[in-house]
Image 1 (cartoon, helix red, strand yellow):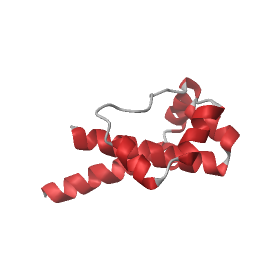
Image 2: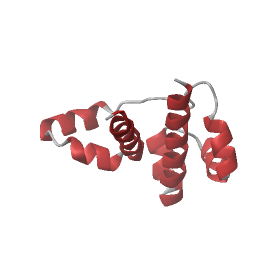
Image 3: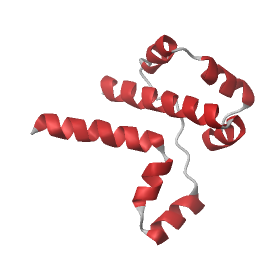
Length: 103
């Protein structure tokens, strides 16, 4: 369980930092965080991100955008959702690697 928490936390931090680097305003909106939190995330070094990922709890909150979910369900193209959400893509890769190692 701890390894999974680590992977989720690190994936989130990488996703968050990338989203904020691309466009800080859009990233803050997407991540539902304020400017001060955004600046802290942007200032994290890789060693700090690795250390923070070791927390024994998930460091992010899950928030669902009902309109987006409904739109994707109507389109029935979950691929678009995966492309848009780097965290999901990273977690899918982790799961695929686990499945391959179990074979």
